[in-house]
Each structure stands twice: as structure tokens, then as C-alpha cells.
Image 1 (cartoon, rainbow, N blue to C red):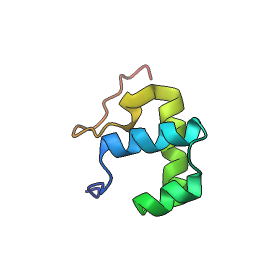
Image 2 (cartoon, rainbow, N blue to C red; image 1 turned 90 degrees about the vertical axis):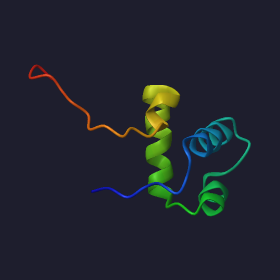
Image 3 (cartoon, rainbow, N blue to C red; image 1 turned 30 degrees about the vertical axis):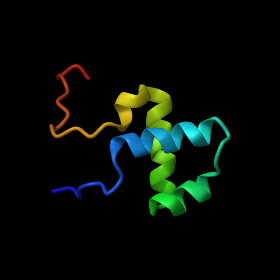
Image 4 (cartoon, one colour; image 1 turned 90 degrees about the horizontal axis):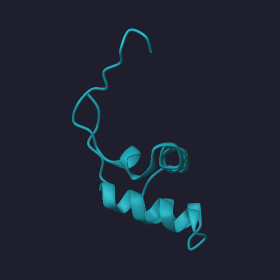
Length: 68
């Protein structure tokens, strides 16, 4: 069972967009949100590939087709 995030979806989106727009540094955002740098980097990668939907919490397991 995974851990429940202490950072809300909206906080993640706001932090990542602030970082990508150059308004705040990664380190300052990590300190403010109390997350590890590698976690924040994963958020940025997911945001770039999937948009805001990539940072939203999903309560379901991801299902893949046999072709994938």
C-alpha cells in the first residue's frame, strides 16, 4: 500500500508551474513543500509529458491492455 501524499494536487501544479516559469528555484520549492528533490523532478517530468492530469491523485490502479 502506498503512502498518502502530504502535498495536494493543486500545490504540486502551482509549484511545478512556478518552477518552469522561472519564478522559483527547485530547492526553494522542495524546502517549502518538504519533499525530496528527486520527487519534485518526477513531478516536473510527469507535468511535461501528461500535463496537469499527470500530477492529479488517482485512487485506481492503472490498467494496461495486452498490446501495451
